[in-house]
Length: 74
Image (cartoon, rainbow, N blue to C red; front, side, top):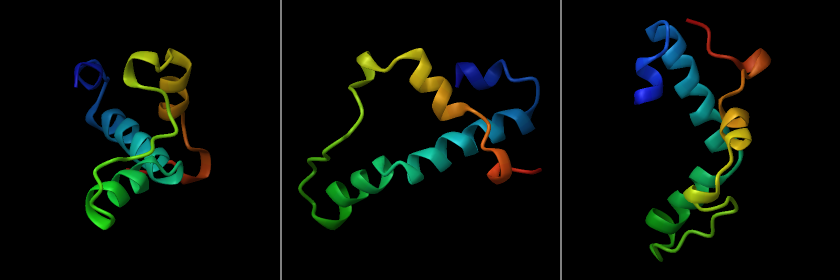
């Protein structure tokens, strides 16, 4: 939320949110969360990524990088 407040426009904030959501779906972590919570109900997701404390700035930048042809157009 703090990061979005600094965005120059709502369009930029929405694009950044879309990039994160797109990559969450394509990288499978969202799907794993759904599997653990809704499908198998074991509530034990097997995350492939590091715990939040170990996520690097480079990983964050990669999640928020432009999507090229699949970029959100407003």
